[in-house]
Every structure is written in C-alpha cells, then in structure tokens.
Length: 118
Image (cartoon, rainbow, N blue to C red; front, side):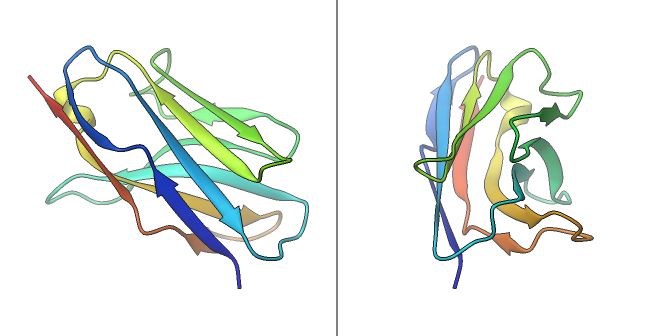
C-alpha cells in the first residue's frame, strides 16, 4: 500500500517562507508524478505544482516565481519551497502521486495546514 505523508506546514507572516515535504512509502512503480494541491475553506481543491520522474516541473500561475517544487528520488520525497507567502496562500496543502497514464491522482496524503497572516 502506497502512503504519502506531508509535513512542514505552519503559521507564517505574509512575505515569509515555508518548505513542505512529502514522503512516499510503500512499493511504487518508477514512473510517477508528484504534485501539490491546496484547498482553502469554502473553495475547491486546486493544483499548485507538480514534478515528474525526470524532474520536469509545472506550476499554477498564482505561485509561479514564488514556489519551487523539487524531488529526491533516492528518498522518495517531494518538496515545495514557498517564498513570498501571501494570505491567499492559506490552505490545506495535499501531496499527490499520479502514475504515468492515469487520468487523475492515484494516491493522496492527509494534508498539512499552511496559514499566512497579514
């Protein structure tokens, strides 16, 4: 059984930084994309960033230039470095794993809360 465990969330002032981590455990195939999504109260879950098995990244327009996604395949860990945080970044951040060819995410973590105060 594949499990994803996020960490690194917390409370930070606007303009500050946080780094989220997500560790993948269990047996997986090699070709998968790791991603970050977020959900604010009263809103739908939205895409934040993703990185595939060869290291190609993608970002939502709202976080480009502020967030950086990276992965350590040896540690099966994905990171999300978040800089210049804004109050509108406040949300529950989820890690996801998507196998190549899947229509949607195959596994999700439980989420880690990020709160940005103004």
